[in-house]
Every structure is written in C-alpha cells, then in structure tokens.
Image 1 (cartoon, rainbow, N blue to C red):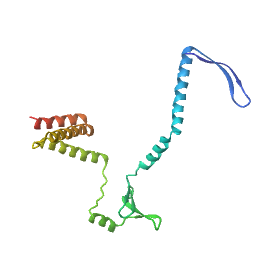
Image 2 (image 1 turned 60 degrees about the vertical axis):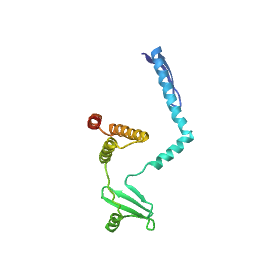
Image 3 (image 1 turned 90 degrees about the vertical axis):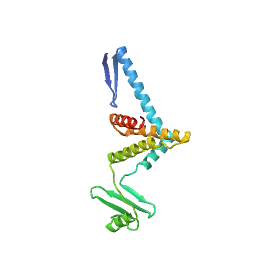
Image 4 (image 1 turned 135 degrees about the vertical axis):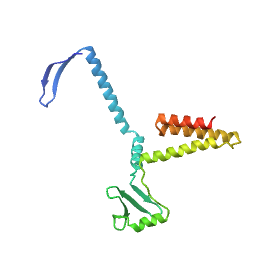
Length: 187
C-alpha cells in the first residue's frame, strides 16, 4: 500500500493545499474508512432528531434509581442511607434539610413489622436459587394432579425452574443438580 504526499502549499488562513499519490489498495481502504465513518456519524446525528430519543432519554433518567433512596408514601417522607456513616437520613421539608433518623423511629419501624435489610447481589442470587430448587422439587411432589391442564401447568413450572436454575447457577453445577433431582424423582 502506497500513500505519498508530493506537493503542498500553505495558505494565509493556515490551511494547506496538497497532492497525495496513492495506489488502488490505499484508495480503497481510505474510501471504506471515510464511508463507514460518515455513515456512523450520520446515524448518531440522525438519532438526535428522532422523537423517540428524547422520550427514551427522559425515561432512562427517571428509571435510574438510587439503591440508597427510599420514599415512604404513607408518611410522605424521603429517606436516604449513607453507607460511610451507616445511618439513615430523612428529609424535613419545613427545615429544607436532611436529618439523621433517631433510634425511636427505627424502633417504630421494627414495631410496625418493617425491617430493612440490605442484601448484596450474591445473597439475592442465593435466595433465588434456593427458592427455585424448592419449587422444582415441589413440581415432582405434585403427584395428586388429576386434570390434564394441571399436569401441563406443573410441567411448565418444572421446565421454567430448570431454565432459571441453569441461568442463575454455574452451568456444570446446575446440570449436576438437575440430573440428581431427575434421578431421584423420575425413577
């Protein structure tokens, strides 16, 4: 591939007139690059003029929810958890400021049966996998089903559990577990 600058002339405004000699391969690559770059920019610019883009951007901004923020609709109070301080804050509209939630309010929440527990994604996955395993075993234990539609429904639930377990577990562990359950109940 050959690209060679043979003549150039500098203009008063800082621009340059030049002559570039290229072989066919270099011309082909340059034109391909220019066309792809031009089309990419046109697509990006075209997105700016699509009404759906504005709606999608607005919805995305609304959907971004802070995991540490909680709004209690019953009491019309906003709460925010600060991890560094391990404390909940509530927003007082009259004072226009955030205040630490006192122990009395925490005890009140526990009395009302509301206990807030922060779980990590691994803990949530573990809980989900345990519930899916229980559900799968229950589908094998439903031997009292009489009607064909109940049997069909049970099979759909069983297959869904298997699919979800395959997704949430390490594939080799999921296969081993599913084969073990099938060996126990499908004999």
